[in-house]
Length: 364
Length: 236
Image 1: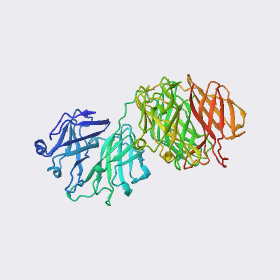
Image 2: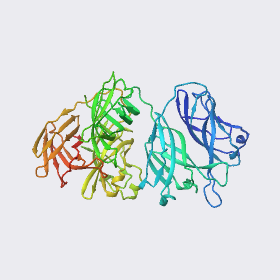
Image 3: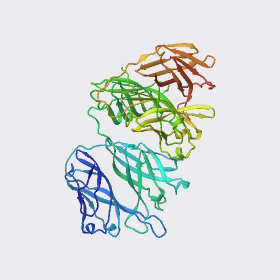
Image 4: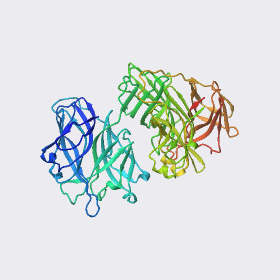
């Protein structure tokens, strides 16, 4: 995290969350400013001055700029759009100044963007799409197939695509648990909606909230056009996770997907061992319909992680996901080809499970 | 045995109604006991997660662990899993079980261990011993039982292909587990792993190493029922 050291458009100090990686930086900030301020009017590009970044100049990214307004009938007419943003030098973040906002007393800018180093080759990172399953009371909220996130160690890409709301909930506050979204993300995320009668050059925008794995959108934030147009409302954001840096040599294996032979795989895998005496905590899911075993090969195992076996409780991943399985897990082959073998113990003919459990790690 | 000092909840159950035993050993927090939950209260409905306020927890975060959720549905006790973790230094978080809210009240039964994340760079697995089973009433077929005997705690795992009832009970002595007792041991099975209501269970109890499993009026199991198993943590 860091604070801005200044800007050329009359805003106060801006607090940033940041993730700095080789060749790119992810920045999160939300702040307001006044387009009628003298400094803002004088600026041609909005510049934010910051302590030294790891990027000397970047490709163009996008930030959301919006204003809040209520019309004479009391309807919300919050409007906004995306504006270009880039890093000009390692101490200056730039945001395109759009004339559409010049007459408003206050605008809100959301920086939830990833900036890549310009003109520097590097190895591309390929993320894995993770579906987000929205769980609400009676499933009154539904979301599109493209309601997804891509999870990295310290940040995520988030793409929400709203579909519909059951009629009797349309005027109530909305809340859904986003199963699949990391619970360590806390952010106000703009939602791009449709419909605009007063400002033809801008789109509708409102603000959702993400915290503790929940997505919420109060009724007081939603314009009348929300969910009633032919266009789906959506969000598009790079969000920073509230993670604590690993201690050196942490006994953890975390991989979005660990592959085995053929189509065998374990998804959302996260294993950690405690200090002695060893406990093992495991999260993950797999669907082996033709076998009672799932053998996968982690890419890397911490040097000091020992071979072990553990007995876990898991839930059935098909049906209503309520039935309980007893599963054995064995980590072996360290040093040559490490492998993790999950075996159904409770008499099933398949291994279609989700594990979220902690057990005792026992010697093999 | 030390009772967990719960000073508040966010789901309408009075703290004095929560009877949880705790045992702390190094980086491990063992929790055993029941939390009864009335899903019809306004507090429950307003809560995203169920939280127990416990001053002075031994660590300020934990990895996730599993807890049992039990509901009496049309006279049959069903069982599933929920999750538990330490959210901060004074809060334990348990996930709600929406599937059992219509059968309120439901119960969360804790028999779990928690440890803080990001705390180890060296460790050593523990020794599990195979436990010999001596049936004194009824029987178990194709059974295996393992025990990890810690200082002040133990983990027991039992897995059997089927139970042979005698006077609606199975009584079995676990050799080497004479110092272990537990008021409630859910012996889990499923008629069908896709059952929309979850697994079923036979109530069991362990007294000085003698495990008694009650049939409790359960109907005959259909062909294809799963094994009968449990994994419990016991505070000595």
